[in-house]
Length: 434
Ligand code: NAD
Image (cartoon, rainbow, N blue to C red; front, side, top):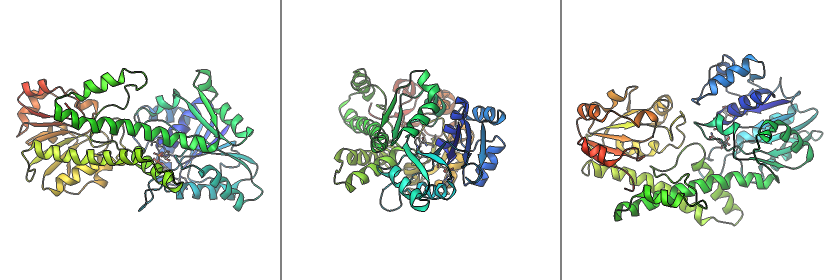
C-alpha cells in the first residue's frame, strides 16, 4: 500500500516510520527543506527514543522516503495522511487550521485518481468535512473520501504507543476509507488492538475529549495538593488510595507544576472555544485550564517562600526544562512560565536539560544561563529546583550536591525525592502536596 504523510514532525515522522515497519510503502512530506535534507541522511531532527533506528532501518529497506513536496508522490498514493500542526490561533484560543487547509489545497491541485485523505492532526469537529469541501471546490472531478484517524501517542514513548495502542479510532464516511485504513492497521488488529469505527464527527471529538479528560485528572490532583499541604495529608497517599479504584485508575494523578506540552494546553483551549461556538460551554474544562494556570503561579510563590520571600540576587539551578522527560519538546512547558518570572524578580537562573536546551534557548529570556553538566549547574546555587523528572535527576548524589551548592534549598516540583532523605543530608526540602 502506498501511503503519503504530510507533515514530518513528532506525529508524522513516528507514524510514517511505524507504517513502513508494518510493511507499507511510505513517503513522508514536509515543506521544511532543512528537515527533509536531514531526514534523507538518516538524521532525526527531534529527540524520540528508538526513532533513529526505526527510520534508518526503513530508509535502508526503501520502505520510507522523504520529500519536500507532494508533487512527486501524490499520484501513486492510496492513502494521504495530514499530520501538520494545529497550534492555538493567535488571539482567540481556537485551533489554527491554516496548515491543514493549505495542505487540502495542495492535495486538490494534484489529485487525479481515487484518493482517501485522512486527518491525523488534532482538529475541531467538522474539519474533515471542510477538507473535503476545499478539495472538491478546487477540483470538482476529484474522487475522494475523507477520514479522521486521531493520534494518541505520547512523546517520549511514541513508538511503543504507536505499535501497541490502547485503541485505534477510525472516523469514516464511506467503505473505501474504512477498508484501506483497516488494511493499513492490520498488524495491530492481529495483536487484538480494539479498532473503533465511528462517524467523522465522533472521531474528531474523541481526541479532544480524551486529552481534556486527562488534563482534568491532572488539574484535579494539582488542585487538591494545596488542601493536602494545608492539612497535613499526603497527596501521594491520596492519589494511590483513589487510583486503586478501577473506576478511577492510577494514571495522570501525579502532582506537578501544571500540565504542558504540545497537546493538553492547546487542545483544552480549542475544546473550550469549540464548545462556546456551539452554545455548549464547558464549565469543567474552563476550570481545568484555570487550575493549571494557577498551579504554575503557585509554583513561583512556592519557590519564593522556600527562599525566604525574596529571590532577588539568588542563584537558582533548574534541573529539567522540557514539559516531561524523554523529549526535547518545549512547547508550553511549565518552565516557560516559571523561569521568566524568576528572572523578572532578579534571580540568577542556570538550567540543565538532557535534550531541551537548544529549543529552550530560543524561548527563555537571554539572561538564563545553560549548562550541559549537572554539577556545573548546581555549583554555588542557593536553591535547586527539579522541574522535570528526567531519570538523570532521580538518583542525584546528595552529599556531592550539598557540598557544591552554596545554599541548601531543594525544591522538588515533581516529588521525586522523599523528604527524610533530603533533610538527613541537611537540605531544606520543599515539594508539592506533602
Ligand atoms: P510538529 O510541529 O512537530 O510537526 C508538524 C510538521 O508539519 C512540521 O514539520 C511542519 O514543517 C510541517 N508542515 C506544516 N505545513 C506543511 C505543509 N503545507 N506541507 C508539508 N508539511 C507541513 O507537530 P506534531 O507535534 O507532530 O503535531 C501534529 C498534529 O498531531 C497536531 O495536530 C497535534 O495536535 C497532533 N498530535 C500531536 C501529538 C504529540 O505528542 N506531538 C500527539 C497526538 C496528536
